[in-house]
Image (tube, rainbow, N blue to C red; front, side, top):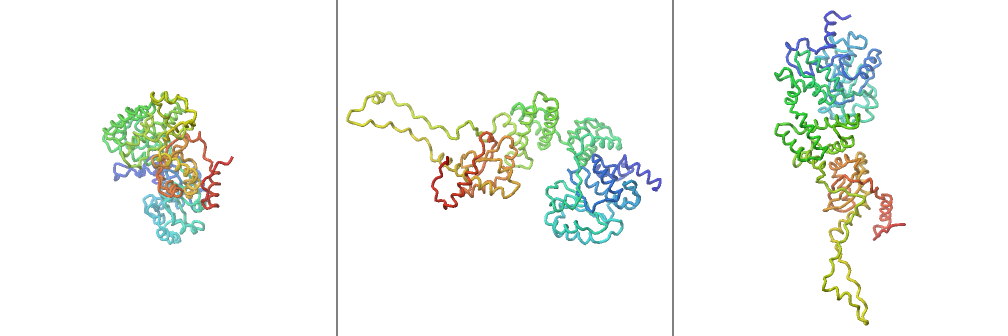
Length: 541
């Protein structure tokens, strides 16, 4: 049985921070001071908590775990709690006491047998080889040695060293891997581990914990301010606690929503709503005026765009539940969402981030700078210009009958208005369409590019550029293609024999149908058989 002092600590840990008196202790970041120390303190992950606690209670733990989830959802905290549980001297119903020497050493980071690594900086083969002797060395102070590796998806070649160990680990060793992107981990590794998924935390769960923190620090706060922080955290408790820590650094009391926006560099809610309204109505000038005010106020446009997306999502949810949101239907809101999809904070080209926001406004206003869409109702080539009418002086001469001894002269042919440049563009387009299966095969060598190349079609050649069209329901792929132009241009170079540029546009290609790739394959096969001696391939009826 634990002592009376230990029981007091246990009860305090269920409702308060890890230090007994924050006013007397050195300052610690909120997310560190309020890090969960027992299964009971983990919030928002009931399924994971129940399963792991029962496994500890029944002594049915696996030798390796994979914790998957967004940042700030409790993966590393759960790993440390599990390390406590397997080494706790006073385990009660699967819950570590957090008071015995083993639990205290793990909590304070002094336990030599709990090894934590960050794979972001320890992902080489040599790093994994240095780890192996520690795996096969017996624990010195604890019953079980625990290896916690964070951001494990960053390990690439090093897995070859660990695979055999993961399959047949020595007794008394526990592996816990944490990752935000399990798709980057080899299936052979995942199959050797028990996977637990950590869900993003709901805003009400985040808000409840923030309220406990504010009560502990004896600070008053506007409920709207906590609600704003909870939404901005996007499901991550650590982000919410970091934002609250920044706000608590001010001397304002009570803390209001306006002060939170000012301290975090956020735009006013009215500015966000005005920008969304401008996108909805296509009022580009009003939207640009909002951007001007936002920059003049010293607000970050990246954060502003995140606020716009968050507000748009709230309108979408409202529209789906009630059929309309502020007069806009869900279809209208979806169109605005597609315009914002292409905005990428990592792009730092001409005009920067603001240029992308302005392009979204111009697109909403119908003045997009992208090439015009190719319609199935429009002819792909321009009509030949009509010849000018004959002069009046030649009318009478043309009406006179020809002399009986002469054959009537043929009417003059209409002037050929086609230019060599337009003919070259048409010829290039035909060559691209005939060789498109080869481009598909080349680009699809990388399996990740298969959805991209399957969705687009060559629709036009203009100014020496091959225009690739993407259907409207797959507009997001157009933005991905812009970042993978090199692969597309290399595939086109193989069939054209020279470098050529690519431009990707959104078009109603779904109405025009896909090109006959099967026929193109047959033609390409025939050309290989006859060694390119085929001068012309006619249509087979």
